[in-house]
Length: 201
Image (tube, rainbow, N blue to C red; front, top):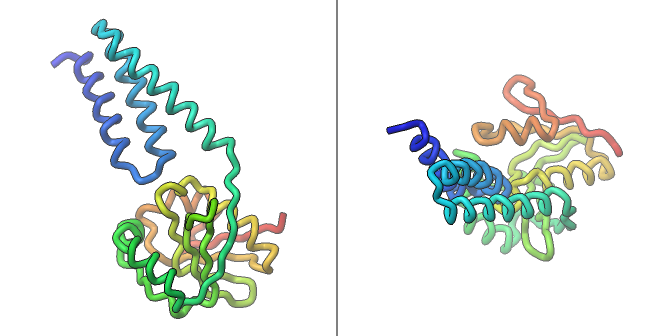
């Protein structure tokens, strides 16, 4: 097998892997890289229809990525109680994905005194639950549905919380799939927890 064939297989692999991703943003990024590689491969072997198709895919992906990065989503907060029926339904429906994101996390939010849905265009984008004491929030659950795993919900919350008197966020849950998010949002490791100091804008 020549290096050219391996190059083509790499492009195909990345395109296929992209469709397994739950984050639409990451899907577009990986799909773009795979399409670029496969377009170059197609040009090398002179398969011009395949090259044209992948060049078009790159253009489509770049258009959507630009739109995603330059369109500010309008979020709103809806506060609920731990026994809220819609909250229980949401957690039940999304339980498999929540457990995949946060292995072993408890969905019993009875200890939370602050539970809020973050909605976008009347659709639930995320659910956030915490215990609050003296301006510090200990996060029990910070879950976003796949469509909104682009840091936008986290940025929105961190803009809102200082105005509510919150100056510190503490997270002790599973971090296996969230190190990039925690670093991006300003969390620092402190023993067995991650801490984020919020600044009033």
